[in-house]
Length: 111
Length: 115
Image 1: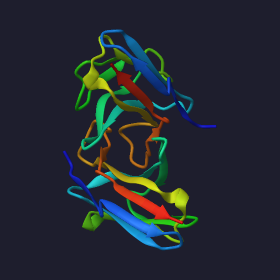
Image 2: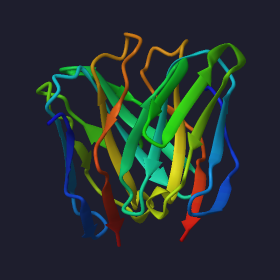
Image 3: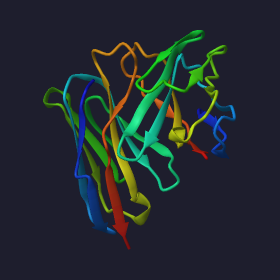
Image 4: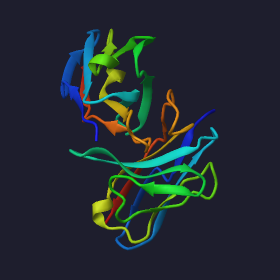
């Protein structure tokens, strides 16, 4: 299956700082999503972004499908941004609709 | 409100006692699937369904059963649970597996502990 690599694995920030999370994938995709898993375990859908750029408040994401990577930007981070951020992709060649998840970036934001 | 609803959210039970985790979506989605999340292994697909009465195995189907008798429901059945099925489970759905531009929507998760 398609390989999904996220970096960095861990990130510690002070409140107010900006950050960039990266997701590399090994093959063409027709679906890419960014999720935030909060401390209660819920997976919150942040972006559906197989290509292009989207913004939602302090968060934005860019996917360059031809170069097989996506970036998630968090500006003016808050303590509530803490948690694990996952990138998940659907292989363009897949007929199963399966999402392949990266291992995630553990973000900790200190006050 | 469009959502995927899983029940229960938390369950502690014993080895061998059959259990069912329910999943329901109100978006008229064709595609539904189950994932499990384990430390160090990430999220892995257990089973999926492309439509009513159409189901198939994902990456880790052993010890699980599913059914899709109605479009909105996709229960996960553990006939004889064992401790290695202790995990965080997610149900997901999307409009269609075959179309582009179809994000998957996830339920809030079910934490199962099998003693």
